[in-house]
Image 1 (cartoon, one colour):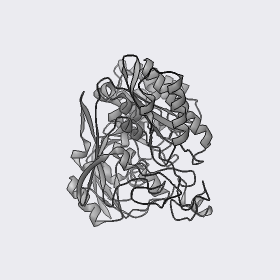
Image 2 (image 1 turned 180 degrees about the vertical axis):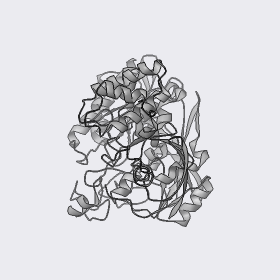
Image 3 (image 1 turned 45 degrees about the horizontal axis):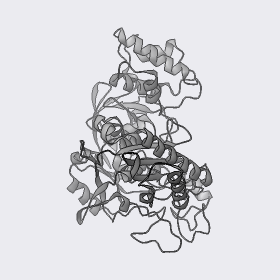
Image 4 (image 1 turned 120 degrees about the vertical axis):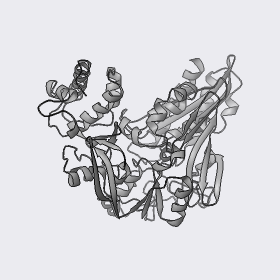
Length: 160
Length: 338
């Protein structure tokens, strides 16, 4: 069965007919064409598919698309503007928080969720907030440095 | 993972609608955060024809906490519970247990109702359809033997691994249930029937890893609540293979009360060890004196007798039993002395 899904996706209102058994991840990638959100383990273990629903990091591979009706959904594509990276994107760029890059959209969205709630987190809070995400390249140290860098940029007024 | 099969989602906005939707569709399952259910659907473990999205039912989101009592609606998010100041202050065992569940993103999704009813787990069960069919399936799905205990005579040993159940058992919580025949409230301990006894047949009051909840057809857990006891100290701790995100090797909740220098009251509950969360029986006999070698030995003996980890995870049963005992001892001594 299909139904009308209305949500605010990356700051724009959208309305799409989606089937009941479509995952948010597949809706974003296949229907809307936002392929920044990645399919990783595809079972809720790796965090590569993390998006923000009402500013809270959520696994889009375990969320049914129709359950975000009326909510605000932000993906990696919502960050930054033409020619200007967001604070967290800058951090990952400057501090080499990204190597192969596959996990990066998930890490950035999990970090964005953290910084929207808590603009000045401690190292322990950063580590805790990224606990649902897996990276096989960086060893995490550079990712934590990247978020720290974003915190500093945030204090200068750059949006997370 | 496999693609999702066809199903229909029903989105009730009141509890009455949710109960009615369940009564209309006997093969329906309630959907909370989806972190357990959606994975199981994608593995072909369960195939509900209808999902009832419980998130639109406002009354189930309520969190009521003060110094005297705690009441949590079934749709309360695990992250809300873990971060709630009053829960951390008056019922630390509940906040700590919630904070120990999976990772932070999962906690934004998962609900207390889902965690209390979490499906039991086993290495022969939480696998893809393809994997399980190559192994002739198992008792918990469509197979005829339990691969963990092939001589178990029809008893399933899948392990209960929700973290909030032991925390709330340690507080003597009650659980509210709603169904087609009305509402009822039972002690939380009575919700769990995974005794896995091989000498008696599986009944409504005596189940195993497969029949692990005493919910009747169409019933839904709506809330859980407990009263505070003045002077109660409580805590939760858990050992897991990866600290940031994992089911428990063993999890332990402890609540105790001191009277001067002696142990006045002690409740200890475990998860990740049996097909049900186990509230240790016989702890009252350990109370009445100081916390000494006698209490430690007595606690060890109770754990040895009542904790029954089987080879349902990658860690062997004897290791999980020892971990459970050590965790319990550490927590009791920390709370007594702290």
